[in-house]
View 1 (tube, rainbow, N blue to C red):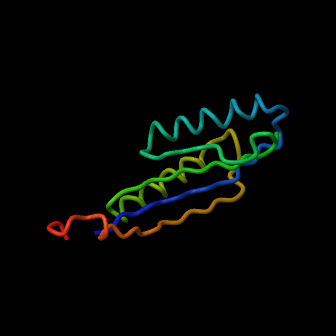
View 2: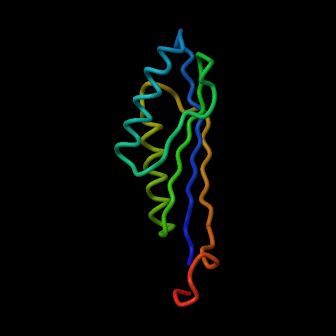
Length: 108
C-alpha cells in the first residue's frame, strides 16, 4: 500500500511593497484563502523580514496519487492567479511513500 505526499514551494515577489506590514497584509490573506479552498497545509517559509519577496509552501498527503497531483496543480494555479503578488519561481513534486511496514500482517 502506498501514500503520496505533494509539496509545492513558490517565491512571491512584490517589489512595490514598502513595509513588512503591507506585505503581510497581502500574503497572509492569500494563504488563508488557499487553505479554505484546498485541503492543504500551508506556511510562510522565508523572507518574512524582507519587503519585496517571500517564500511560501503547501503540502498535501493522500492515498490517491492522481488526486494529490490534481489538487496540488489546482492550488498552484490558484496562487498564480492572485493579484497581490507575482509568482516568480515555483517548484513542486510528489513523493511516493511505502506503507507496507506500517500495516498489520493480515492487511497486506
